[in-house]
Structure formats: C-alpha cells, structure tokens
Image (cartoon, rainbow, N blue to C red):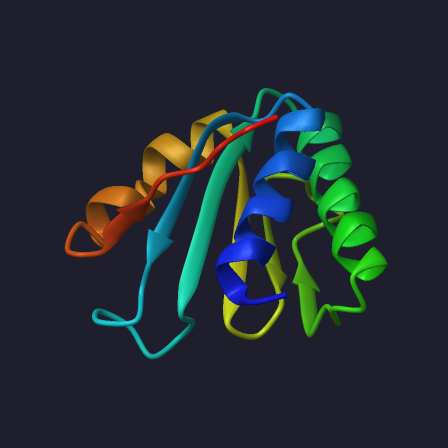
Length: 115
C-alpha cells in the first residue's frame, strides 16, 4: 500500500467515527515534516480520542507502524505520526485556532473518496 492509499484508509477510519471536515494535503513541496497531512476534527474530547483510536487500529491492520501518538490524554489535538503521513485530529476549537489549512495554504489538497 502506498501513502495515498494509506491516506484513504485513514480518512475512512476518521469518517467512521464521524470526524468532520476531513482534508488531506500533499506536503511534499512545502514541508520536510511529512509527505502528507490528514486533518479533521471532532466535537468533544471523547470523539477526538475515538477517532485517533480508530486510525491507530485501522492502520495496524495494514502493518503500518505508528511512530508517535501525542495528545491522546487531553483529546484536544492528537497527532498520529506514521512517518510519511501525519494525521492531525483536532477538537473543533483547536482546529479553528491553529488553522493548519491556512498555515500550509501552498499545499495541494488531495481528493478523498469517503465510504
């Protein structure tokens, strides 16, 4: 599975937990942090944690390692790092505050097909 397929798997896992405004960005030309970002949000801490757990569980089915999972206990901004792909799962308030889509506005958005 390549990274674009992984992004789709992650997006579907987020969608299954009713994540909102799921956006995937191609970061290759604008950042050295990762090749791709997937950004979404939940409406409360428990939902944000549930989305992160779903992502972790789903990618492990495909033998992808989670390099780092940060922010889970607080449930306000959880970062799930899979190397080339980083998933940012925000609480609604934090998503509006940090506005990563604007910060990385030069990145190309990747079209997702949510099931």
